[in-house]
Amino acid sequence: MTWLVTLLLALAIVMTGVDPVMLTEYAVIFSVVALPLTYIPILLVANDKSYMGSYRNGRLANAFGVVYLLVIMAVALSAVPLMVLTNVGQN
Image (tube, rainbow, N blue to C red; front, top):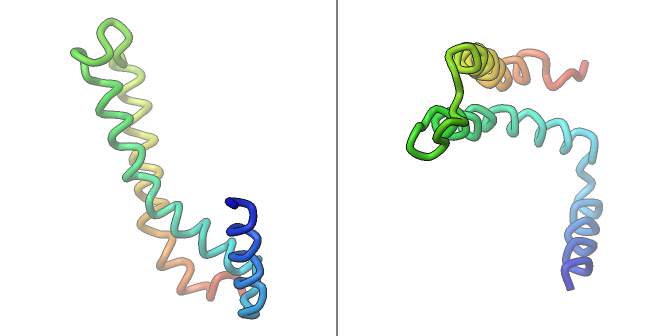
């Protein structure tokens, strides 16, 4: 049943005339925007001593984690404006 629903949804997308490559590009851009929202809870749990015990992150791992968080936040904040400014890479 799941395969049937998936195939019918794919057929519906193809029948609309939407370019699948462009649809994929939009999906990737908007998933980049959501990436910091998925990374912050992981970083917080990794620092929680009551949850992680002796396996929690140390200072070096926290420093790398915060740097990575800043990088993905910069990418997330610039993704949509760059998409608009470059017309999604189209001429």
